[in-house]
Structure formats: structure tokens, C-alpha cells
Image (cartoon, rainbow, N blue to C red; front, side):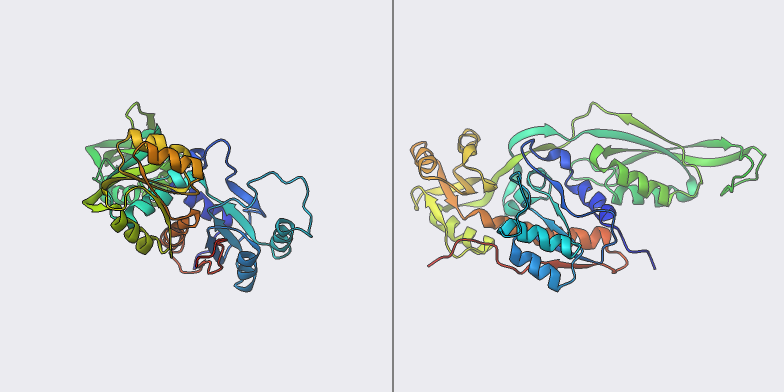
Length: 372
């Protein structure tokens, strides 16, 4: 049986998906309260860290909370236990609960908030609404005995290497002869100390996103039979996948704005929403951004969107969108909750192979608005 994972080990894997460097410079992501150097048995995933969420975490014996919205987004000048924020911090410390936040980095990340929202609407040909950069890539070359070449290829591919477009397990392999002489104090997989050994080996080359390099190298080490693995890393000028804010894509078929509103209500599980535009207008090209995205209405229009889905639209920005002929659907900020089960599934898949972890999706209601 494996030892209990620490919060740091869990977060290290999580950040292969949603690295902190993707966050905007004004954001506050990462550790919020507590320590990452602690064993974790119970994890809770939540959109917000409010007092009712913390009470739920205490009841369930949670060690680590992973939240989308940062608990400490606005700088605290004091921690007053008589205020709502102060009570939350006090309870977290008293019950040794660590809080970690992935905010705008999870918005940008592939498979994060905005991709989940796009998938819920079955959008096709999805790309970032506003590109902010390209994924950095690295070439990995590793030398492995022929007997372990397939095992190693599969291990590094499952860890995130060798993905080109819609193809996975992309490698190039050459056969050759490797030589080495084990020194005193070694325990070689092949050969004897002090004797030159010649081995039939494969040179395996593949491409790795820089953000996933550490986990790929760990997978390589685990799959390789040698005590010392011979490998090379090369920086590449190749451009990786586009990264950016929001998403834009196509509905499978044109629908009326009213029909899309009903579709959004159903897929995003919201009882009501606001919209701007002619309800009978046909729409197909959809831009979206989880959270507060009103400042990107011009980007949505420039990209040819028929309709823009985002939360927290204000009166005058809605007027501007209407005047420029851009329909808008505002289902509220809280629809970002759609990503919580996806985070839970990621943790179960990547961190819970031995089933020692319990992963909870918070059931506490953090939606401040009520609907009549």
C-alpha cells in the first residue's frame, strides 16, 4: 500500500493541468491558507470558499480544499474574527484545512472552465476567444533497452508527452548499441561492476509541453530499468497549442437566440438568465467566457460571434453590445461551478490510483442570487 499523498504532491500533479504561470498578473492563485507539506486523505472541490463551505469541509474531515475563486482575492489589512472572512480563516486554521485556488489559470487551461462550458453546449471548432500565448515545447530523447522501449513509450505518452494535434503516442525510434561500465557501488540492471557492457537499445524521441515536463520525466524514470537514465532535453522553436481567454466555436446547427437561451439554461443548470438581442435571430457562432467577461464584447464581435455568453453584464455594456449587433446571454457568474466535477475527476484519475483519497464536490450553496 502506498503512503498517503501530501498536498504538495497532489497540487504538483494538478498544476501539470493548470500551471500557475497561466494566471493573469492581477490574480492571486495557489496556496491561500495552511500548508502543502501535510498528508491528505480527504479533498473537497468548490467554486467558492465561504463559511458554509468550510463548515461542510469540517463535517467531512477535509484536509485540502481546491477552489476556483481565491479566498484571499482582495488584500486583507487585518484578520478580524468578528467578520465573515475572519471567521472563515479562523475555522480553516483551527481545523488544519489547507486551501488552494486555481482561478484565471484554470480559465485559460485546456479542459478548464471555458472548455467545459463550450463542451456543455456541444460547440465545434473551438479556439481561444483572445489568444494570449503559445504552449512552450521541449524535445525529449531517451535511450532505453529494446525490451523496455514500448513500456517507456506508453508511460511517457500517458503522462502527457507525444501529443501532436489529435494524435497521441507520437515518437520516433532508432535502434543502436549502448555502452557503459558500472563503477564500484552500483547495482546495474544489466552487466557487472568494472566490466564494459554493450546493450541493444532504442533511442526514443518525442515532444513534451514544458508545463508537463516534470511529470513526464518522473514517468520516464519509473518505466526505465536502469539506475541512471541517459536522456537529453532540447528547447524547441515549434509553437505549441494556442492558449488564451474565453472560447469561440460553432453550434452544430443554427438556432434562434431564444432556443439557445433554453439550451444554456438546461446545460448550465440555471433557473433563469438575461439576454440581449432579438430572440428570433438565428445564431451559430458562439463566444463565451466564464465569470465576468463583459470587457471582451468587442473581441467577440471582431471574431464574428453571433452571440456572447458571459456573466455579470452591466447595463451600459449590454447597451453597447446591442448597438453593435452582438447578442448576449448572461447566465450568471455561478455557472463556473460546472468545472468542479471535472476537477474531482482529474484528482481521482491522476492522484487516487490506490483509492486512499476521498474526493468530495461541495454541496454548499454559494450562489448569492435568488430567482422568482
